[in-house]
Length: 127
Image (cartoon, rainbow, N blue to C red; front, side):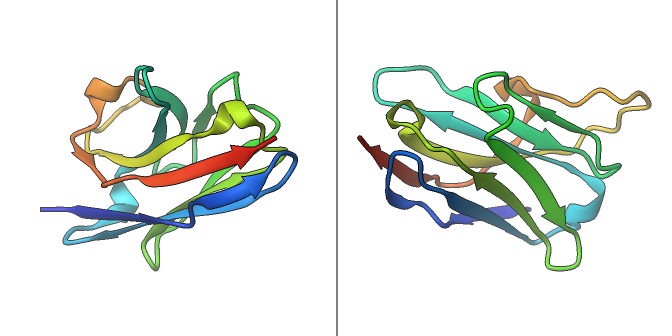
């Protein structure tokens, strides 16, 4: 069973940057799709970005151009580099795993498509 552990959250001023990490243990990360979601207080969980083992990526329009996702299959770890952070980016950020095999270039973005989740890491952006 895969366990996902996020790190790298914290408090940052608007315009600043953070890099989140998610390390997987218990299985082979390299063949799976990894995603990042976030949930702000009182709001539904929101897709942020995902990356397949083929390196196909998908990023939500709300963070496109500011956030980027990458992975290191050797570690195995997935990263979310966040820049130009704004107070509306404040949320708990979750790492998630999708084990489905897609023949197309589709990158899953719905929360129900992910079967394993980390505990989350808080990101707070002050104005």
